[in-house]
Length: 502
Image (cartoon, rainbow, N blue to C red; front, side, top):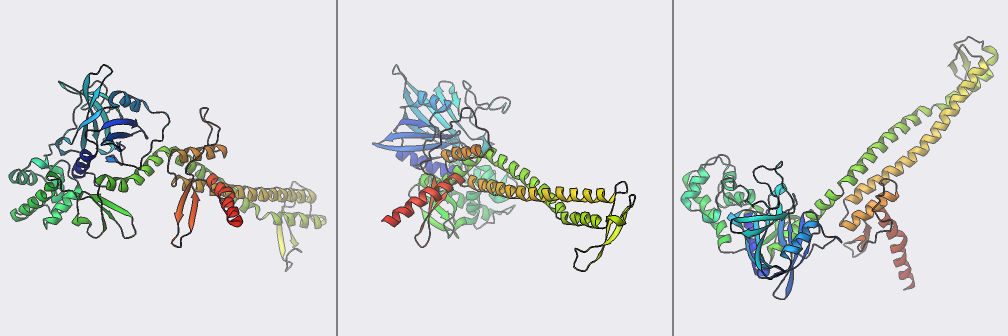
């Protein structure tokens, strides 16, 4: 994913066209690290998504995210109090970093006007959403979606009533404010491959765009040194890229494979991805959401179901060990018939066996060739007692064989079910799907019901996935075992009946 400073600049440019001057009418927090603002501007409602999860932090306009929480979290309530009804007066990108400042003008109950700044820091696992108040001495933190205490960061704690400081710049330069002389000095002063020198020197540049600059300059990205002519070419390619930002000549593009699988997106055409299918988009936000939404949803679902996956894998491991024990028991009991034969032969030849004998040889009249067989005896027992011991062992192993077969059938069903749950985990799409699967596992005895959990069956508004084959047939697939049962016994049966009477 290429959400670097250039793409972020493109997003901010788009947001200024769409929501600058608008008022924040609604605030939701669909997920733990996600905000959804409804902004009213030019008589239209726009939904602004701000998410700071570690995998897919981003900022964009969207129609794909829905509020799924009945009870808003504390941070959401806090924002409703402080910026609800506020007017967006500025959207900026400090020092071309992956940081967005949304300046909001709000009035309190007395009509006094104050300025709040909602800051989105897009920094991987350190991403955060922070609400600050503008004061004479700087920005004071009111609250944040993630609290960073002193034990986590002594340099830059993020806590209420602390003064806000921007993340360390790591001595990177603003690419929008650089001339050729400074460019050459800065890049030449770095060690390593050319493309690394570029993105490590300037803020907001990603490895992807640094490689693109090298490609456009006809310089190998992995070169450790370049001559003066090559440096001139690299600078010219750098300027051409930065001009897109300065002049706002963005042309968002989405890249995918021939079979439609997403590859990447950017704010303008990239020669790096010339071999991919190119789809130009009228909106960078649309391209970002097209590429990111499904992946972000899967990541969120995987986070919420990590405990279920761990539990199921533990049950599978335990069940496989049970299976091995039963298979060993079955293997050992397969020879039970020979003990029955020993008992019968001892009984038949008992008149030839004296107490104290350790073994005896007899003709096995149960075998086709009437072979001789040697049978071990307990010298402390009589012939009849030895025969009874073998009959007892036969009976025990026979019971073990039957029980092991029954257990293996049960174990097989359990494993099939647990494997189907693992498949279901990859098919979940929303909070209701998760709750429905948890309820299924409770009813199947794999999870304990929590006291606060309702025993009422969860109603899923979109329980089935829908697919269409090349021949035009419509297929429905359940996302868990209960849904598949209902799909077969009720949903499918109803449609079959309607088709017959139709």
